[in-house]
Length: 340
Image (tube, rainbow, N blue to C red; front, side, top):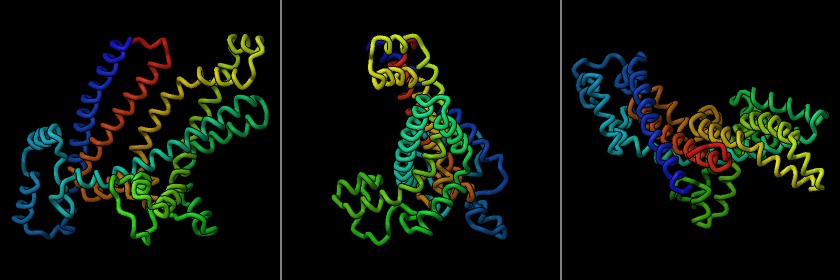
């Protein structure tokens, strides 16, 4: 079994490579089809002398044929080099920006993911257990409302209520700028605060995480509510559940058995949601001025900074591939019907 599982993991891991290559190819050519010149976007004027424009394009490698640019970047990427920025400050390694921004997105993703899963499972279970009652109807309405909420609008409502009116929580940033005793180490501020024993910083970091995590988590919890509720209702009506009850097994234990069986499709959704969170937190980061990958990509798109956008997309694709691999393995372990 262990050998079969190892082969299964290896095959799934190798599938990440073509996925990244396909995504890189699409992004590379799509960026160059779009109108606009990255050099002019950085310079900010079209009145630059042609000789100077050509010189800057040569320095950036944009005067080479498209296929040469494609394979040049691919070769660098295979060696762990994501290129240098084309936007100001030009020539700085893209990887240094990603190393600075990625931890912020990961931290937000983990917290928003936790909120969405806990809230979604709790409301889904409540709806299934109270099937046909007002509670069930309320949970079903909640799932629809949560799923259709527009993130910037919902985020601004929370900012207005808890930040502007009640003054309970900060509305932007990752940490109170007045805390000068905090020094990032890994970029994961919670972990860094704990390592340094800086509890004031830890409290501030957690406060800054609440509103963006709630915004993203509540919006994504609707899908869990609906999926958990429907699967659990289906499982609770099966013969083995009735057999458990007939034997006098306590309702709490029966619910746990049923939940385990209903959890298999939820695991798949969790993987997809985590990937979406990681790559799609752009709206939340923009709303809360969160210095993560989302705001980085948005900023670089406005400058047509090819290398930065390509590098960010490749890193996202890698993480999404790894998360998909973990989900596949968990799914295979939970579901005996999966062959490996």
